[in-house]
Length: 131
Image (tube, rainbow, N blue to C red; front, side):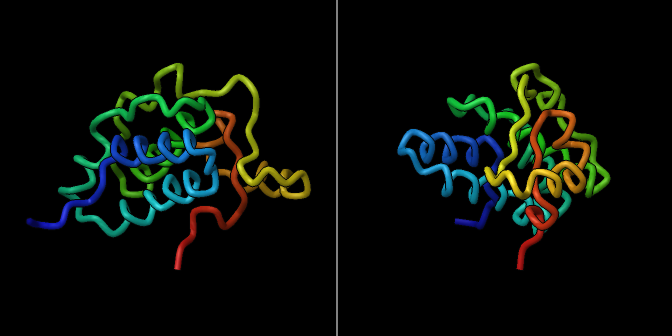
């Protein structure tokens, strides 16, 4: 069987599973890993990776995070983000600082890409970098 990159729907299902098991750290890692996978995928695979909207994770913060990651990744690769990222359930009413550390909130407010900020999701400067 040929290798296939995970879709954001599959990532969302795994994040939901982690959240149901009270393992937010694992869910966060899986979500952010999508950026690296998207970057490494070929142009033809990228469209398929983001086409289908993930089902709700059970936590609106993560629903907004997944949309932020997809929009950011698409724009980074000069692709039009899929329409589902604009759904009302992909935006938060209250800001979420993903790190959870008050001391990093200023960093997150300054360095979060607009794809995140506009949804009320704030990440620190190096959250989207990988080795």
